[in-house]
Length: 141
Image (tube, rainbow, N blue to C red):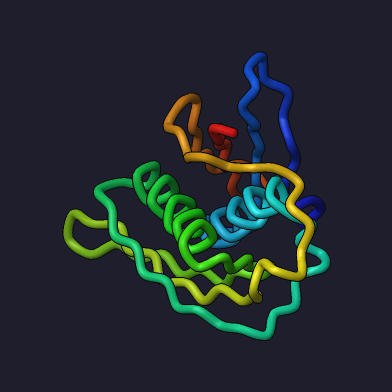
């Protein structure tokens, strides 16, 4: 896999990114990393704390939205940043299930680059490509 994510130009003050992965799970993990990169330098995050995260949704886009929203909620309420994500996605009945392990640390030792206020559905895409998966997300900043 060549690149994990890239930031996209959009006409608004919001931020957009595309995240890539050989699997859907990798693309979701890289989307969380890209969102965190808007907030702080993810290369400086020590992975000394581990957190299990579970999300359920009705479809893949809702799962991506809820996944990123949960990461943002933990950041906003607990002041924790994650620099590594291991994601498993399964389907059970009519639900999509995501179970992840996120590794990171307290925000206190990190410089804040920017703010992510919310995830949006606007122009959200999840596509299977020849090389794996590409997800596109716009966040409200």
